[in-house]
Length: 240
Image (cartoon, one colour):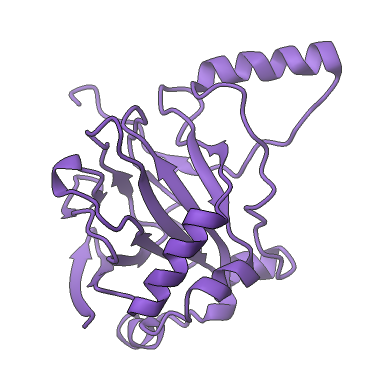
């Protein structure tokens, strides 16, 4: 049975839902990952530091709906927070894949003054071991830590600072399913979903090296690919 634990972090609500999805949905996900997932190396925190690129598998709306059911906690979230998110406001969804050498500094998905939006993040690894790390911090000062426990769903506003904990086991593959809900985004972009299934691959996992190679490609082959979506990066303090 699902259990909802509610928090307030930096003035924002955060819900942590354990045993979030029913057994048949978990089976749908396990089958999709095993048979259908195709990852691109196309996600980064910041291009100026050593926050390496991560693997991502974009999920189309039809694919997502074939695996998961509508978020049944949205009505309760809206009632308590005053938001009005619906499944029709979901503007992007993808699977993130991290390994032990990936580095993280934390970020917000939008500017703090942006219009309301919601993020859901689901821990997608059956058999994950707690000693491998791979949890999730929320808040600028890491006010809340959520351990990586299979079938746990986290709900939080997209303005809230969050950070992925590194994975300690060199053989572990950390998976999470991200969804973003933002009606304002859809209104500003003609109700078009972000197509996370078509982002370009990168040539190096290190941001600096990748930029050098992209520049070389532009100069030698006159090929220019658009950058992926930006996120608002909060740099670590000098003491960290």
